Amino acid sequence: MENVIIEKKINKKIPVKCKNKSNFIPIFMISVAILTILSLFYLNIDWVKLFSRVPDMGHVFWQLGHLDFSKIDLIFSSLLETISIAVLSLLYSLVLGIIFGMFAARNIFKIKALSIFTQSFFTFLRAVPTPVWVLLMLVCLGMGPEAGVAGLCVHTTAFFTKSFAQSFESISDETIEALEATGAGRLSIFFNAIIPTALSQIVAWAGMRLETNFSECAILGMVGAGGIGFVISSSLKGYDYGTAGVAILLVFIIAYLIERMFVRIKRSIN
Image (cartoon, rainbow, N blue to C red; front, side):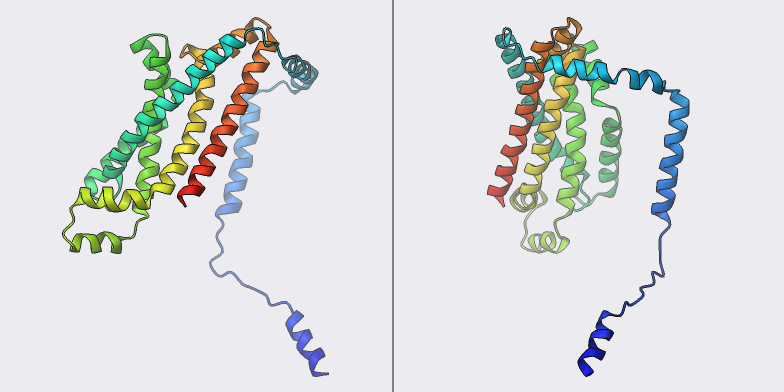
């Protein structure tokens, strides 16, 4: 009898009251719904036309599936150019991101004005989309991969500055104060303690950004920055769907390999 009473007490539901219940999530969802409805009305989308073209989309993807390897030399050379642009922009931006991330972090030099100025400046650079920076570099440098590397570097450096600053700030103040007590300087603490501690996070950010840069390179090539994007764009314009299908497939494969490679690197570091 006592066991039955205990089981009943255990199975009894205990009401939980949230005294500080936030209304942020319902307000956010309602705001998103309202903005979505207003956007649909503003764009005035012709839904009848859209759904009538769905079979055409299936036809295009069917044509892309008929792979044509007759221009594989051109596709490979363009793919290597795209990979080179993505890698170069990543390496340059890594170095710049670490340097400016050091200035943006609040716990390294502990100069509030320097940190706020650096973060604000790179927030502005990050707010401008990558294609805009590439188009500006095309005007300055002309058509070619140089504009792609320079344009990607601007946005990628701004991204790394914020990301690395957050990683550096995750280091406990007690660790930094203990090293300062031993007489270590700011730069010594940064390169010998903060960088090794944040290395796994830096690798994770670098892997994600390399994948993003590679994908963006495929798009930026369509606006004259060179690479595989130009091949895809020209093939689609010329209705050469087989060549475009091969190029798109290789882009997917390389992006997947980049992701898996950095996952393995991060695991080995951890």
